[in-house]
Figure: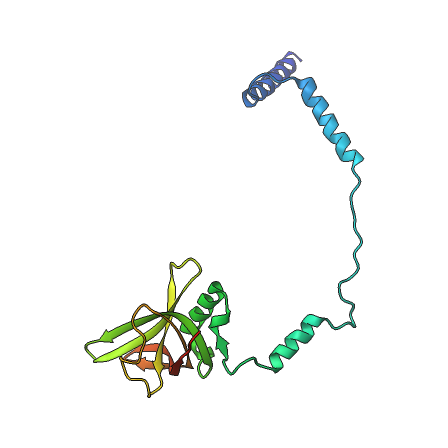
Length: 193
Protein backbone atom coordinates (compact mmCIF):
# COMPACT_ATOMS: atom_id res chain seq x y z
CA UNK A 1 0.00 0.00 0.00
CA UNK A 2 2.82 2.33 0.91
CA UNK A 3 4.54 1.61 -2.41
CA UNK A 4 1.36 2.53 -4.29
CA UNK A 5 1.20 5.92 -2.55
CA UNK A 6 4.84 6.58 -3.37
CA UNK A 7 4.29 5.55 -7.00
CA UNK A 8 1.24 7.84 -7.23
CA UNK A 9 3.23 10.76 -5.74
CA UNK A 10 6.08 10.16 -8.20
CA UNK A 11 3.66 10.16 -11.14
CA UNK A 12 2.03 13.38 -9.92
CA UNK A 13 5.41 15.02 -9.31
CA UNK A 14 6.67 14.08 -12.78
CA UNK A 15 3.46 15.35 -14.36
CA UNK A 16 3.78 18.67 -12.53
CA UNK A 17 7.44 18.90 -13.54
CA UNK A 18 6.55 18.27 -17.18
CA UNK A 19 3.85 20.95 -17.10
CA UNK A 20 6.25 23.36 -15.45
CA UNK A 21 8.87 22.75 -18.17
CA UNK A 22 6.49 23.39 -21.03
CA UNK A 23 4.76 26.50 -19.66
CA UNK A 24 6.75 29.73 -19.63
CA UNK A 25 5.99 32.43 -17.14
CA UNK A 26 3.12 32.60 -14.67
CA UNK A 27 -0.12 30.99 -15.77
CA UNK A 28 -3.44 31.78 -14.18
CA UNK A 29 -5.33 28.52 -14.60
CA UNK A 30 -8.64 30.23 -13.76
CA UNK A 31 -8.15 32.49 -16.83
CA UNK A 32 -7.28 29.52 -19.02
CA UNK A 33 -10.39 27.62 -17.89
CA UNK A 34 -12.60 30.71 -18.36
CA UNK A 35 -11.21 31.29 -21.89
CA UNK A 36 -11.76 27.63 -22.74
CA UNK A 37 -15.38 27.79 -21.54
CA UNK A 38 -15.94 30.98 -23.57
CA UNK A 39 -14.53 29.32 -26.71
CA UNK A 40 -16.81 26.32 -26.15
CA UNK A 41 -19.86 28.57 -25.80
CA UNK A 42 -19.02 30.32 -29.08
CA UNK A 43 -18.82 26.99 -30.83
CA UNK A 44 -22.07 25.75 -29.27
CA UNK A 45 -23.97 28.95 -30.17
CA UNK A 46 -22.91 28.82 -33.80
CA UNK A 47 -25.16 26.88 -36.12
CA UNK A 48 -23.66 25.29 -39.19
CA UNK A 49 -24.43 27.15 -42.40
CA UNK A 50 -25.65 24.84 -45.09
CA UNK A 51 -26.57 26.33 -48.43
CA UNK A 52 -28.67 24.38 -50.83
CA UNK A 53 -27.58 24.81 -54.40
CA UNK A 54 -29.27 23.74 -57.56
CA UNK A 55 -27.29 21.82 -60.13
CA UNK A 56 -25.60 24.16 -62.60
CA UNK A 57 -26.69 22.18 -65.64
CA UNK A 58 -29.60 19.82 -66.01
CA UNK A 59 -28.90 16.48 -67.67
CA UNK A 60 -30.81 17.42 -70.82
CA UNK A 61 -29.45 21.00 -71.19
CA UNK A 62 -26.76 22.03 -73.65
CA UNK A 63 -24.41 24.75 -72.45
CA UNK A 64 -22.98 27.65 -74.44
CA UNK A 65 -19.45 26.42 -73.69
CA UNK A 66 -20.05 23.13 -75.49
CA UNK A 67 -21.51 24.93 -78.49
CA UNK A 68 -18.54 27.35 -78.65
CA UNK A 69 -16.08 24.44 -78.55
CA UNK A 70 -17.89 22.63 -81.34
CA UNK A 71 -17.96 25.75 -83.50
CA UNK A 72 -14.25 26.41 -82.85
CA UNK A 73 -13.36 22.86 -83.93
CA UNK A 74 -15.37 23.10 -87.16
CA UNK A 75 -14.18 26.49 -88.36
CA UNK A 76 -10.46 27.18 -88.10
CA UNK A 77 -9.56 30.85 -87.75
CA UNK A 78 -6.61 30.65 -90.17
CA UNK A 79 -4.54 28.21 -92.16
CA UNK A 80 -1.97 27.99 -89.33
CA UNK A 81 -2.16 24.77 -87.31
CA UNK A 82 -0.08 25.99 -84.36
CA UNK A 83 -0.07 29.76 -83.81
CA UNK A 84 2.39 30.47 -81.01
CA UNK A 85 1.94 34.24 -81.42
CA UNK A 86 -1.46 34.15 -79.70
CA UNK A 87 -0.38 32.20 -76.60
CA UNK A 88 0.95 33.38 -73.25
CA UNK A 89 4.70 33.10 -72.69
CA UNK A 90 4.30 30.04 -70.45
CA UNK A 91 2.15 28.22 -73.01
CA UNK A 92 4.47 29.16 -75.88
CA UNK A 93 7.52 27.85 -74.04
CA UNK A 94 5.69 24.62 -73.18
CA UNK A 95 4.48 24.13 -76.76
CA UNK A 96 7.95 24.69 -78.22
CA UNK A 97 9.35 22.28 -75.65
CA UNK A 98 6.84 19.68 -76.85
CA UNK A 99 7.77 20.37 -80.48
CA UNK A 100 11.45 19.78 -79.76
CA UNK A 101 10.98 16.64 -77.66
CA UNK A 102 7.97 15.12 -79.49
CA UNK A 103 8.47 16.33 -83.07
CA UNK A 104 6.53 13.44 -84.63
CA UNK A 105 3.29 15.02 -83.36
CA UNK A 106 3.95 18.23 -85.32
CA UNK A 107 5.48 17.09 -88.61
CA UNK A 108 3.46 18.50 -91.51
CA UNK A 109 1.74 21.21 -89.45
CA UNK A 110 2.01 24.90 -90.26
CA UNK A 111 3.56 26.77 -87.35
CA UNK A 112 3.75 30.52 -86.69
CA UNK A 113 6.10 31.78 -83.99
CA UNK A 114 7.81 34.95 -82.89
CA UNK A 115 10.92 35.36 -80.81
CA UNK A 116 14.56 36.33 -81.04
CA UNK A 117 16.51 35.48 -84.17
CA UNK A 118 19.67 33.45 -83.71
CA UNK A 119 22.28 33.00 -86.43
CA UNK A 120 24.99 30.35 -86.45
CA UNK A 121 27.56 29.78 -89.17
CA UNK A 122 29.18 26.33 -89.29
CA UNK A 123 32.59 26.86 -90.87
CA UNK A 124 33.23 23.13 -91.32
CA UNK A 125 30.14 22.75 -93.50
CA UNK A 126 30.07 26.31 -94.82
CA UNK A 127 26.41 26.55 -93.84
CA UNK A 128 24.25 29.11 -92.03
CA UNK A 129 21.62 28.07 -89.48
CA UNK A 130 18.81 30.42 -88.44
CA UNK A 131 16.50 29.83 -85.50
CA UNK A 132 13.70 31.58 -83.67
CA UNK A 133 14.22 31.36 -79.89
CA UNK A 134 11.46 31.88 -77.36
CA UNK A 135 12.14 32.52 -73.67
CA UNK A 136 9.98 31.27 -70.83
CA UNK A 137 8.02 33.66 -68.57
CA UNK A 138 11.04 34.38 -66.35
CA UNK A 139 13.37 34.80 -69.35
CA UNK A 140 15.86 32.38 -67.82
CA UNK A 141 15.40 29.51 -70.28
CA UNK A 142 14.76 29.43 -73.99
CA UNK A 143 13.78 26.94 -76.65
CA UNK A 144 14.31 27.47 -80.32
CA UNK A 145 13.30 26.06 -83.66
CA UNK A 146 15.40 26.38 -86.76
CA UNK A 147 13.75 27.86 -89.83
CA UNK A 148 14.62 27.79 -93.53
CA UNK A 149 13.08 30.55 -95.58
CA UNK A 150 11.68 29.91 -99.06
CA UNK A 151 14.18 29.72 -101.91
CA UNK A 152 13.59 33.30 -103.05
CA UNK A 153 15.36 34.55 -99.89
CA UNK A 154 19.14 34.88 -100.31
CA UNK A 155 21.31 33.45 -97.52
CA UNK A 156 22.41 35.37 -95.41
CA UNK A 157 21.50 38.73 -97.00
CA UNK A 158 17.70 38.43 -96.84
CA UNK A 159 17.68 36.77 -93.42
CA UNK A 160 17.23 38.79 -90.20
CA UNK A 161 20.33 39.75 -88.21
CA UNK A 162 21.30 37.95 -85.02
CA UNK A 163 19.41 39.15 -81.92
CA UNK A 164 16.51 40.92 -83.62
CA UNK A 165 12.86 40.02 -83.05
CA UNK A 166 11.31 37.87 -85.79
CA UNK A 167 8.01 36.28 -86.62
CA UNK A 168 8.23 33.27 -88.94
CA UNK A 169 5.70 30.86 -90.37
CA UNK A 170 6.54 27.56 -92.01
CA UNK A 171 5.90 23.84 -92.31
CA UNK A 172 7.22 21.88 -89.33
CA UNK A 173 9.61 19.10 -90.33
CA UNK A 174 12.58 17.12 -89.07
CA UNK A 175 15.86 16.06 -90.64
CA UNK A 176 18.96 14.15 -89.69
CA UNK A 177 22.41 15.60 -89.83
CA UNK A 178 24.83 12.85 -88.90
CA UNK A 179 23.28 10.90 -86.04
CA UNK A 180 21.23 13.81 -84.71
CA UNK A 181 17.60 14.66 -85.39
CA UNK A 182 16.80 18.36 -85.83
CA UNK A 183 13.52 20.29 -86.09
CA UNK A 184 12.96 23.00 -88.67
CA UNK A 185 10.28 25.15 -90.24
CA UNK A 186 10.63 24.52 -93.99
CA UNK A 187 9.55 26.97 -96.69
CA UNK A 188 9.18 29.60 -94.01
CA UNK A 189 8.24 33.22 -94.58
CA UNK A 190 8.87 36.29 -92.44
CA UNK A 191 5.69 37.83 -91.02
CA UNK A 192 5.32 41.44 -89.92
CA UNK A 193 3.63 41.28 -86.50
